[in-house]
Image (cartoon, rainbow, N blue to C red; front, side, top):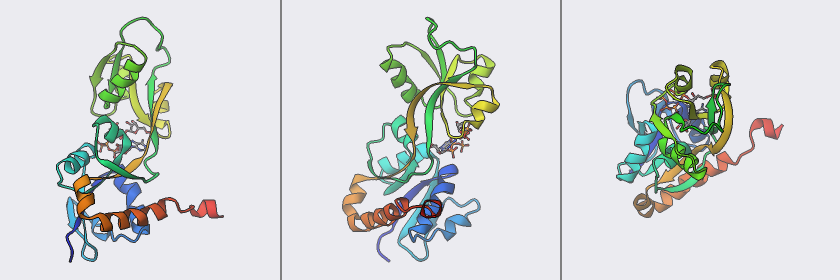
Length: 217
Ligand SMILES: Nc1ncnc2c1ncn2[C@@H]1O[C@H](COP(=O)(O)OP(=O)(O)OP(=O)(O)O)[C@@H](O)[C@H]1O
Ligand SMILES: O=P(O)(O)OC[C@H]1O[C@H](OP(=O)(O)OP(=O)(O)O)[C@H](O)[C@@H]1O
């Protein structure tokens, strides 16, 4: 078999949304589907290796050449200032960055605000653009807790359905930027495996641009 293309796929939410796309594009994902606790798979039928990693680590694998292709949210790419080559917006994992807080938050209050977030760089840029000096506290998850506990005045986080904000009595004060899952490639790998990578990307692009059965009806 020819040299394998190494695909680093963000495990969890992205994996769940991307596997059906990969399958519709003719890529055999049966090993990943039945993965249990395994994290790396060589397809038995196609020249692909799948690496399952956390989003920020997907960018590290790509940067260091340990993976050829990465499938990861644009939130991670922006936050980690990825310089990898983006070839395709997969159109899934759609959500958006918002500034949110409790009902009593005053975004115009003339005090130095404390902002909780998993995304300090994106948050810093947002407030820099507004000429506002803020203190940023990095939080690893359940970011919504920050304004509810008094840890921060507000949060910058991603939201999809709005359910988490609603159920925690938080509201949106501003919209920052949209997010979706992207396919990125290591530049050296693209040179080395140009034909195979473009073929895979074309197969996926055809599926991404396909009308859904709902749109067809
Ligand atoms: N609510 C959401 N709706 C849609 N996409 C989301 C949502 N939350 C996160 N994402 C996207 O999915 C990616 C991975 O999110 P996921 O929740 O699986 O991992 P995580 O944030 O590392 O959480 P965990 O630590 O629970 O695994 C994010 O980088 C983002 O691109
Ligand atoms: O608008 P919604 O559809 O409710 O989604 C928003 C939630 O999804 C993400 O959290 P995630 O599930 O990744 O968990 P985390 O808090 O551990 O990051 C995000 O940080 C919000 O908490």
